[in-house]
Amino acid sequence: MPKVLISDSLSPRAVEIFRERGLEVDVKTGLKPDELKAIIGEYDGLAIRSATKVTKDILSAATNLKVVGRAGIGVDNVDVPAATARGVVVMNTPFGNSITTAEHAIAMMFALAREIPAANASTHAGKWEKNRFMGVELYGKVLGVIGCGNIGGIVADRAVGLKMKVVAFDPFLSPERAQELGVEKVELEDLLRRADFITLHTPLTEQTKNILDAKALAKTKPGVRIINCARGGLIVEEALKAALDAGHVAGAALDVFAVEPAKEHPLFGNEKVICTPHLGASTTEAQENVALQVAEQMSDYLMTGAVVNALNMPSVSAEDAPKLRPYMKLAEQLGSFAGQITETGIKAVTIEYEGQAAELNTRPLTAIVLKGLLSPLMESVNMVNAPVICKERDIKVSETKRELAGDYQTLVRVIVQTEQRTRSVAGTLFGGDKPRLVEIEEVPIEAEVTPNMLFIRNEDKPGFIGKLGTTLGDAGVNIATFHLGRTAPGANAIALVSVDQAMGEGLLGTIRGLPSVVRAKELSF
Ligand SMILES: NC(=O)c1ccc[n+]([C@@H]2O[C@H](COP(=O)([O-])OP(=O)(O)OC[C@H]3O[C@@H](n4cnc5c(N)ncnc54)[C@H](O)[C@@H]3O)[C@@H](O)[C@H]2O)c1
Ligand SMILES: O=C(O)CC[C@@H](O)C(=O)O
Image (tube, rainbow, N blue to C red; front, side, top):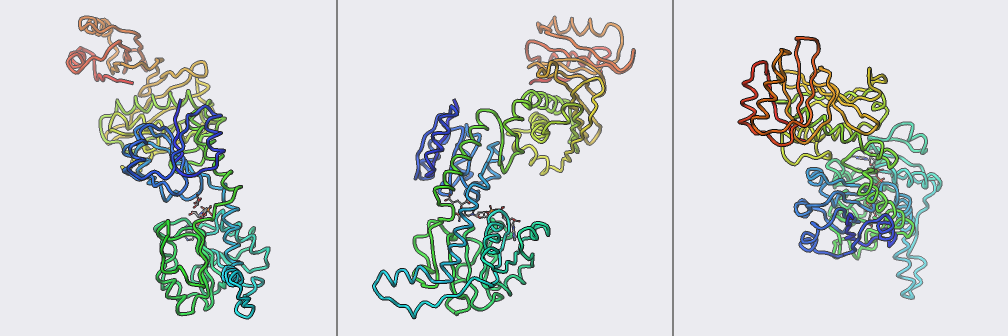
């Protein structure tokens, strides 16, 4: 039974769902990195929010870990490349807290416009400072949205409802989506110059880090108010302090900080600054949503192989997972076969899907072909990191799909182009779920893949089969099955022999020395 650790505070719904789905679950929050490292090896899944840092070091001890599930959006607390390298799927819940976070940004904007926190504190202190707090209306003001994805889009929609004019900077925002939202797509400089309020909703990336630095802040409209409910590193906090102190920025509302938890900060105590402790996603509804989603996604993956919302792996729906299962086996066998008969550097791989196979979600199949292909050539390859390894090594990967599959209702063919030649291997499913090889290097054959196999390219001449059988028999190697194929009588032929044990280089050398043998290779699966 797969075992999951919940290491941050998640809604109790997550525990219920894991148990209902037949998983064992432990809840251990507030673990120090060393404490997490000491126990992570026991778990197949790790469910987190933002407090747990899933570092390379933690992952190095995660010997059984298959999936990290982030109950939320940002995965900047997970070393995704390190997880990918170890074959750990990283999932998030991209929509579960979007409305809640957008509402927090809108609440922050109202709070800034009317200085509600300071007025509240003053009134509680019995001061009744009616003349001290003079706010501004939102009506008719320009809101600049930096990052107009899920959350930015909801903020823009709400702001349009408040009769604000919304301008958005987001290189990936399509003109159609901008029109649909009723926002004007602008460049960053334009946004900075025009906005009365600026709200940030991008992920923290190399491009967005410090997007509001001293230079950018200097270009903003005097009296601008800034809201950040995305990530701390988007604003240079010292530059913001200087702009507030100079009176250029009228106010800032921050839910996120460069270093969290932020227990001390140069902006704390400043009346122009409103702070919340990363509460953007903290509503009952959002926490139920993300806990439920992450538990379901992780359970699906661990119990059925379905993949949803993964950042480092193609999606596989729960409906597709059982259909794909026999194909996954076939695809891995084909990839492994091709990898084992390939002797020189791989330049390109083409995976052809024909007939029924062409109608499937082929991305996971291609990923597992690549895993099979690379496994004989290097260590620690899995279907999560195999596509990345191919990219890093300039191995061009392509897929083709065809409706008709010749003699077969369904066919997968792997074509590997090396520095010297092209090799191919194809297979089908017999009875819908039994993988069979049906073509090797364009020669038709019909064989089941078994743990130990001998692949021979030979000249189609009499006497070859007898000599091979005698050689294997003399070496005490039992033949389980023997498959032959050729393109025409006397032409190039292949033999694929399933044997009951590994053979070793000595015996293989003898086989290579037999008349008619062009090439012999021992394969293991
Ligand atoms: N405060 C919180 O509790 C809280 C809660 C949820 C999400 N978040 C943060 O909010 C961020 C946004 O979430 P989302 O669901 O809207 O993500 P999203 O992926 O839907 O949207 C992000 C948008 O940023 C845009 N973007 C990327 N690079 C950009 C750049 N260089 N300049 C301008 N725009 C750029 C993208 O095109 C995308 O449209 C998350 O990454 C997360 O860090 C915070
Ligand atoms: O889990 C949280 O409270 C914060 C979540 C938020 O930062 C996110 O990226 O989804």
